[in-house]
Length: 276
Image (cartoon, rainbow, N blue to C red; front, top):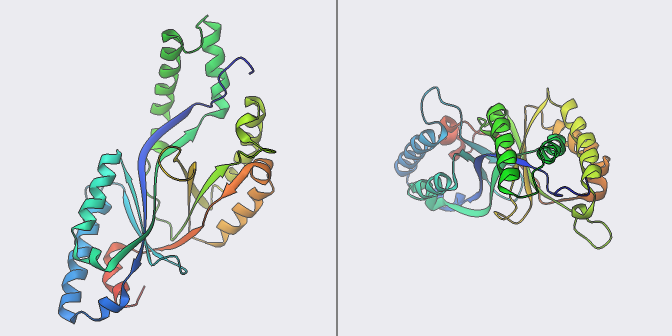
């Protein structure tokens, strides 16, 4: 597609915030037992309010006990806007528990579905109607196509946070170096590689739920990847196999990996006493 725009079309959905905290265990143990119980109860209630908008509503905030030295707690939030995410931050800051939390990392992004498979067809349909690229008619044709796709893909664009036992989160980029640069590869070639890459993920579809969020212009990396599964070993198997795929082996850069164990909000008081 040398005459078409090189940028693949995308669909955007929920805004996403990952928060990573270190917990001040020394200060916590220094509090009187009655004070600890009060803070635990208040914090549990506050997090329950953030977790769902109603009793039967989907999960939109999830809490994880983080493994390793990078932190102690992970909070993942799905909301309809960045404003709503920021309100979550402010609400958490008002809790007494927040005084024991030190933010060590965060990540802001928006759920994204890449349309490599359908972008060419959309561009070709607009061109076949005689619309000049980026003309009002062209833009209207593209917008109408994206609107139809957004409606069809709404469950994937605005999902509930899966209730799986384990979370793996990592950010990633596509290489932009002097020798290898993803953004100079012709569209058709990128489309082929992404198709082959996606086939690997689909083979693991019954074991792991993958949610991709775009973060270009929002955070330090280009995408954030969330993997949810009940068996953490599947994270290693999936990511290892994908490393042999061309799009990862040649063009991928990975950030830090974060692993968390789902911590139901009602079990937070037990966690604060050293029990899962």
